[in-house]
Image 1 (tube, rainbow, N blue to C red):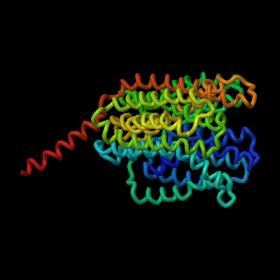
Image 2 (cartoon, one colour):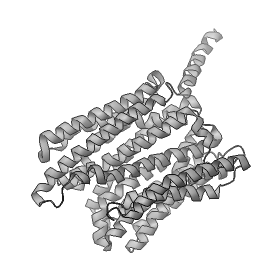
Image 3 (cartoon, rainbow, N blue to C red):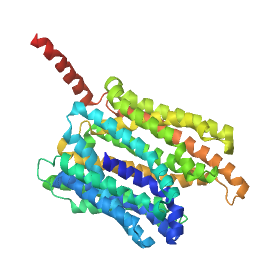
Image 4 (tube, rainbow, N blue to C red):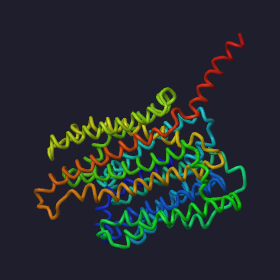
Length: 477
């Protein structure tokens, strides 16, 4: 949970402090782009490999290497003397996160019996909700407080005590696990999947700033060809020595294949919403980072509470319907937000946003925790790391696609150049346009969810275990 929280906070915390970093280090616009995008690229490109390395060499070992490296990289970011050092440290941080994060779900999957796993995924979902909004709020507070005159540096240095605690607790409490049969790392698979991901995500991340160059479109168009080559090679590798990077047989598991599709499209929703929401509040309404960060607190609390309840109380009774209710609830919150943004315009207050944000947060909480639970429900233990890496990677890919689409659904709705007085109204209109797109994607997610199992297998097992426990005292009498 410590590792999952650190990663989620780190993804969001930097955006708030960008202007302070730019001013302090004299960074160019290109360097600023790399400070934010470099982490995401290194993280997304390494996730599948990181998951498989855990299966081969031990998940506890990879977790400890990853969290130690992440903590050291955070220190290097915090003490960076120039933009180049900060960019290099962020790339290292992303690569270490790719080793650390897939082990989180894999360790949960192999440590807990199926009937207990739901409770743990409920906690995981609550941490996801907390991390999503804690990052911007923490970034705003640490930058505004300017602790010891360090300006933006504490946003990275705060990882040091958390990371050290994670290493100590990990060494003490996590037991080692790895795939039962000996596996070897598939280096050709690593090269192909990394190349395919970079060809898709890099042009999306940098496209708008570079005015959508031709090479970017060519790279994105060619990335499916690289992924197709990867699939062909993985089939060959499976036949030859049974040690592929990605176990393609996982996609024959209906719950896994459907869950991955939902994860990808839900990643698009999160990628679009969080960025346009920040642009709307800070660029359109002229709010300070702290004001914007505090506005997100009701959303964060709602996600955490709903995530905890969903897996422990609701999914065992209602199964897949909980996730579908989450998609509909989130869409209802967005529609209410659309109405409020149109009704109050640039005069809208944080209080008038609270109700839509709470409804959206409840919807998101009903999806994030049960989704992970459903995707991993029928995955064999020996492929837990590989499956976990795939779950994280598809989420990251969806996120990157969402961020790329922001330039179309948000900035595409703004007629430039704008007079200063017209910026607020233009941003409000663009925000509403983007929210309609998010509602449409949630409708697609709702339909894709019909392919998920009606009730994840472990909850049926849990019901059986509880019935057995209730029967035992009766038999004793």
